[in-house]
Image 1 (spheres, rainbow, N blue to C red):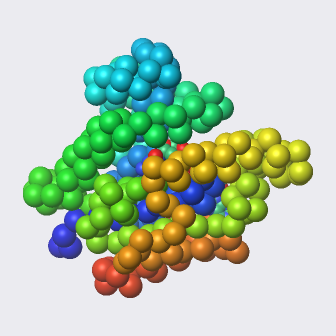
Image 2 (image 1 turned 120 degrees about the vertical axis):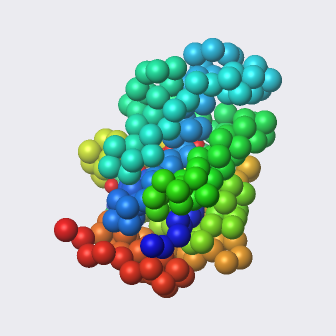
Image 3 (image 1 turned 180 degrees about the vertical axis):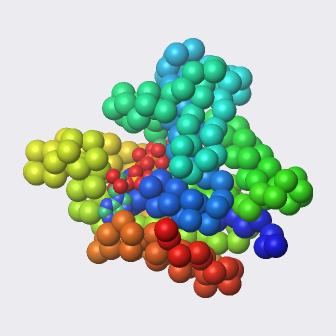
Length: 240
Ligand SMILES: Nc1ncnc2c1ncn2[C@@H]1O[C@H](COP(=O)(O)OP(=O)(O)O)[C@@H](O)[C@H]1O
Ligand SMILES: Nc1ccn([C@H]2C[C@H](O)[C@@H](COP(=O)(O)OP(=O)(O)O)O2)c(=O)n1
């Protein structure tokens, strides 16, 4: 039996972190943690119970946030106060506001603590006992701050053009000039704001860069799986 593995994946908006990480976790039979979903849930909770302009009140709210993260890569799920908020956390209003909450360093400390707890639970002694195989965690600071000791660390990048086109297709169902323009705030402005508190544009020492600009989705998943095999020696089961 192989010991549990921790795979950390960071990258900018639209680089494919969430979709690729889910596919990698599913292929390897690992748990999946979407840390961006935790910042989004913190934003929903902050908007519902505090004033987002009041950093102290948001911190207090997030410390008491009744959040449950689903770790199944096929159906991850996010629950806040017993309610499924998987769709709410992806609304434009939340996307527009999330960087405000993510730039609060006390909120970051609290979410990092929760993220480490989940990663330990899926990769530590408890996981070995329960037959857990490990976890893929993705976000902006997983390779550098949350899990710098991860077995595999990947920075997933893509050109600005490719990222805008993908997000535009996803959100507006089109990638013509006006759809791409309407996506810029969600991608470029947000990356600019996020880059003030996290370092996800350049790979840190020991982090392998996978550039997906000219790869399709399956090729990107294969490229990340190849890094996993190269770094850990784990063979990847062929897809069904
Ligand atoms: N290599 C790729 N080629 C084309 N489209 C991709 C690729 N990787 C991801 N996508 C698509 O781009 C969109 C954004 O991907 P997502 O995983 O949400 O990015 P991120 O989590 O980095 O913001 C999704 O619709 C996804 O299916
Ligand atoms: N580890 C993380 C993950 C996300 N964030 C912040 C930055 C992002 O704007 C938000 C939402 O992250 P998410 O991964 O859902 O963003 P995408 O829309 O997939 O690009 O959370 C962070 O600061 N640190």
